[in-house]
Length: 219
Image 1 (cartoon, one colour):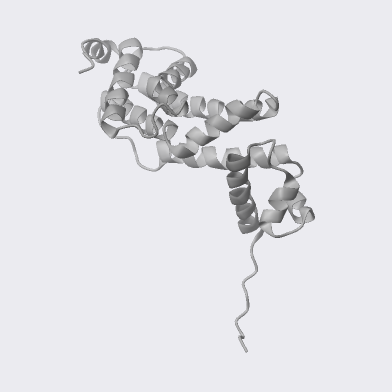
Image 2 (cartoon, helix red, strand yellow; image 1 turned 180 degrees about the vertical axis):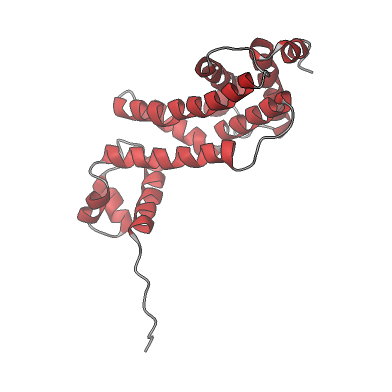
């Protein structure tokens, strides 16, 4: 007889498992096509257990989005320190953001939001608060430090952050989002990161960085 005692799953582990299942279901079936009953069935438990952790489908969706966005921003801003002079740091930041925005995971999430937010505005509201606002906050801190160090001209850091995000969601993101191409060539992504960085620095860098960026030919 097996005398081993099965370890009891912790509440955090249970919550994480629910989020894993829900994330896959939302991506596969969409927001409208995913029900709490279906998620409970996939978990192999009762709806009572699911509702003990999340009071509604909207709350569950927001929790999934919050966790996934936190992981992505950790990869961009926390995983490894961004080093080098300011131009190098801006290029690296553009590369990390672009790689993230072109990833299968984020492209699937974008498509879900666009497809469902017309019928379910709460999805758009949630993603604006969780993803866009959080991204702007992270970038604003990064750029505020650069202004304090004299590497950028003095502007509203929130505005600079919004402009940087707009640049990273340009051509490559759209051709990937619209499935014009299934995979972006790494060399093309690297060139785009350089273009983004130089466009940004031409507008917001200090005199030296802005002058050098304006000489960038794009070749």
